[in-house]
Length: 237
Ligand SMILES: [Zn+2]
Ligand SMILES: [Zn+2]
Image 1 (cartoon, rainbow, N blue to C red):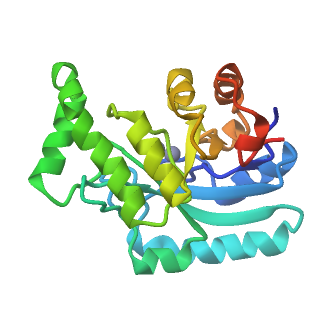
Image 2: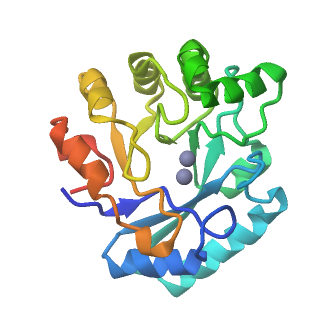
């Protein structure tokens, strides 16, 4: 099994260490057919892209498309799942600039209400973590219900979820579920629980440096050990 596309990569526009061009050059070097730039949504307090940067990012992607015509280059976003009401930090303005939306749960995002903030804190404190599983599950499920999401990133990372419930909504909304090489999720156990459903998966390096693009071995290993066929994964052959 081998990756032929990367949808989950970060750049200096959020917390990545490389430029868009460096990411593209690395992707070409390892023979990828497609590369997506998917920096963190703007409502992440530490890492988010600057809201006003979207036009600049789009222009940069367009310039790179001209320069490197042997690879398909996309501008995406890794939005933040902000609460359990279906809110993510993508509005019409952002949608207008990006080619696809991914979403995941991250500490450091700014929830629109107190309950969301409490959720961050409780997920952070081990003894309270297990008590947030209903909230976390609702957060992921409702984000997919209310938004057109291409890929749900690292489901279960930072907050436990009932993965079957999450996967059922992914099936209903045709949302792809990520197997992350950077995080431990989806885990082999999670994949085993949900692979009978009619869902697709994506392998993601979640590269924060251009040299990490294509470093997907850990995720591929989990997919293979859970018995996933390559036909179930959108970016491998
Ligand atoms: Zn993430
Ligand atoms: Zn990421």
